[in-house]
Length: 112
Length: 115
Image (cartoon, chains in turn red, orange):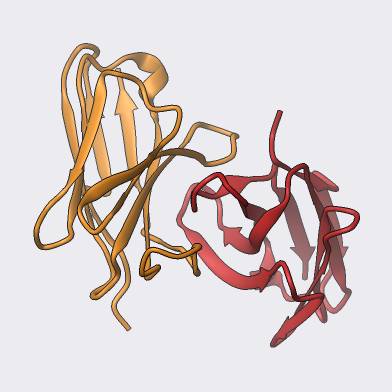
């Protein structure tokens, strides 16, 4: 089974609305990173949150981390059509090297 | 700012052929990772190198091998290609100095199609 799983698998919203997606993982982690991927293209790094952090902001992005629940959320505020993409969380687990384990991804469609 | 460079961007091969994918990490980054992303799937870790030494290994078939060279670029060699090897192959680099990972920056990927 995957280290990380995302919820929902797909999300369709109107431009200007907020989009929230969640990620759960199974083992203790060092860091959790969020990436965006446009269809069949590269992974763009959005934000890294460390295990001792609870919340982080970057522009219109807000990430939370709850290590007691082994979960994270990504909020995109005031969404734009250009935010249409798949969003992945990725964790690097303690005592498992620095490799990233990705969740299932959330496909976000922002309608103009 | 310089990003991770991968070449080629697209590659088409026949079954049982070999392929070599190249990755040029961000300058001064000391760690390189390779990931494979099948159609509609998550990226899966293959192998990583820190300071030119293999640091970790994931679900990489024995038909695949990789190395990191003195200039820090890395190559993923794939032999006896199978249809199931068709995927996007990503390289990522980070600056870790032997500690826990920092941000991993991904290249644009190489799309390998095996016919």
